[in-house]
Image 1 (cartoon, rainbow, N blue to C red):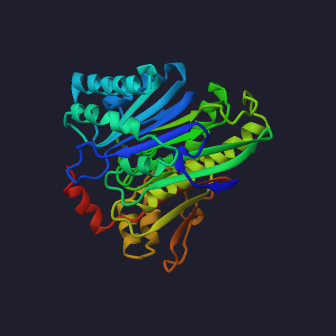
Image 2 (image 1 turned 90 degrees about the horizontal axis):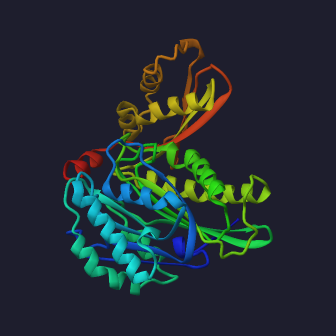
Image 3 (image 1 turned 120 degrees about the vertical axis):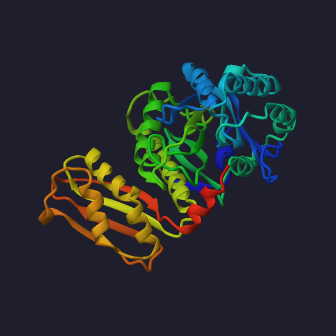
Length: 379
């Protein structure tokens, strides 16, 4: 695997762009677009929140045929809790982008991120759409990555090149997320592109497998959002023999996809609102992987553990309390806890619960004064 430049527009046949359309008061980029030259087999995973934003309703409907050719996203407004007009404006956004790209509106996916409960300024999006489409370019991945940010401080993007069936295949991605980060989905947006040829069933399996190991293993504050999704587009222009089974080619593709997702997931944690530390929570000795992840996630989401981390305090008692809160009948003599040095950039907490051989790791950050300040003012 080779790391390359370009982000989401690195694979063959993709262009991207990002610009300011007037949604954000800050004047920062707030409208982004990814487009493929040809229709792409597409898979998506979405938030498990029962309150789902309007654009996700539309995108789920458009993905019923496992195909898309473009993704448009705005930041600064979540278009959530916006009733009938929220869905209408999401649909119209797809229509105007579809018309400008000369593709069906159903082949356009749409999503939003930002403040909940405010009407989407659709007219601003529609007015900026021609310029957005006109500015699409192979080097536009960075603009797309920047246009989706809210409280984020940094762009999060990556691209890799691999060999599948003797053909060069690329996978690119970008993501946003800083606060409201928790699993199922990880509360964020992620957009991944590839020029590989993969069947729809195998693409869904690949994305689910990668997300479970990456985006669903991160947390900043344990809060689940209403707008989160990750999409994976594969347009087949690399010319490899289509991946239809779980053989060698599928394994190579999945390993690269997981690498891309894990890189983006870790960048989200590193950029957590007010975060000063990057933390790995390891759970050893669980009965199965599900239990191990539950224990690790409970420790990672404990405000007492997270504030101790902020204070560089290896308070193992708070870890023990978090583990015990699950009621798993873990014996005191079986529970072992250790911290790595706080002098290093990455802090590791290891818990062994003595119930089996399963292991899981969750990535998180500390909880600082700055987190409270950021979220106390966010609306």
